[in-house]
Every structure is written in C-alpha cells, then in structure tokens.
Image (tube, rainbow over all chains, first blue to last red; front, side):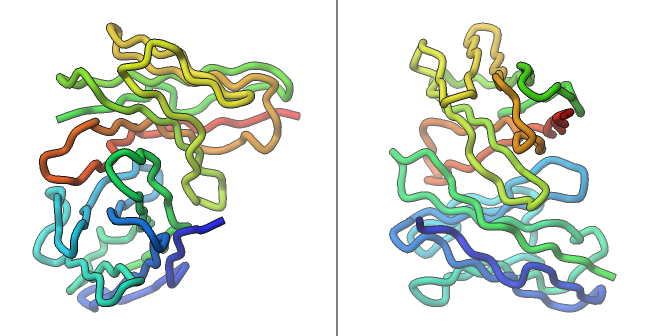
Length: 114
Length: 118
C-alpha cells in the first residue's frame, strides 16, 4: 500500500541553524501539507501546497519557514533559523484531490532544537 | 474560524468493554467533514473513521462508530469490544467541504489519551 515517508525520523540542531525536513508524498497525490505537534499539544496546521505553490498558511508559518517541491517526488519544509520553540514533531500529509477527503500522514520527524 | 474541543484529556477502558470519546466543534459552515484519527505510540496518524455532515446516518467502521449530532455540533467516537491495540491518542478533526484557497487543511482537537486495561 502506498505511504507517505519522511526523513529524517529525528533531527537535533542548534538554535539558529537551518534545517530541512523531507517528505515523499504518495505519488498520484496533488495536495500536500505540513503540520506541527509540540509535545503534549494538538496537531497544528502549518501550510498547504497545491499546483507548485502555497495555497494556505497559518500564522505559525512565518518568514522563517518555506516549502518546496524541488522535483516530482519530494516535498520539503525548511526552517531558516531555528528557535527553541520550533522543537516539535513535524508531520507531512498528502491527499489526492478535492473529492478525496482522507489525508495520509507520514510517520513524522522529531525536531529537537538545543 | 473553526474550533474543535475534546474535553477528556484521558480515558481508560477495560479490555472488551465499550468506551465513548467526546468531541464538540464550532463552525458557521453547513457542509463539512469530521474525522477521528488515532495516534499510537509510534506517532503516525491513522484515520479511524470519517463523517460527512450532509449525511444523517452515523458512520461505522467495524468496532468503531460515531454519534453525530449536527445541531449540537457534537461528534463522539464509540469503540466497542476494546482491544489492547486501541490504546493511543485519539484526535477529532474538522475539514471544510469547500475551500476557496484550495487548501482543505484539518483542524484538530487536543486529543484524548485512551488506555486499555487488560
């Protein structure tokens, strides 16, 4: 069964460093998402991406964040200068289209900023 | 903006018994989707069940069923014959039916941690 994959599973970085989190969505899916879950809290929407551009972003997704789909398979989230409060699980998700309401989630990347 | 509230941070159930997890939401929209996602210790989010707001019939998936009360904006999940593998965080989520921005993102509640006692 197709699945969303994410790498790395765990990333440790120092405050102020740049990190890139990688996701490979399901191959025929068209809509891509990043969500964040701070430990013990709810899952929060960061950004959605469709047709090679951002379709919507939350207030969390400030200028420090960017997303890219550099080729036909990868979908990346970049944090330019990490802060302690960026420590969280980051989930990538994808869905095939408007009529298909199920979002398929990846296993997540645990980001630890020290 | 839509909000989703799960008022039970933790619940426990005896194996083979039935448990109900609560969820309420607030929206001004008339058509939308509601979901329950399961997040086991492995942390991957897995869809358990979905409900289209325009359908009056409550959704059922094997041991999982929902009680959808549209007027009350309530969407509870019932797990029958609970199994040890049901132990997880359960998140209620909302999705608009239409999105002018083409986004269709999910809005989640804070989750309920379910423990299953052998």
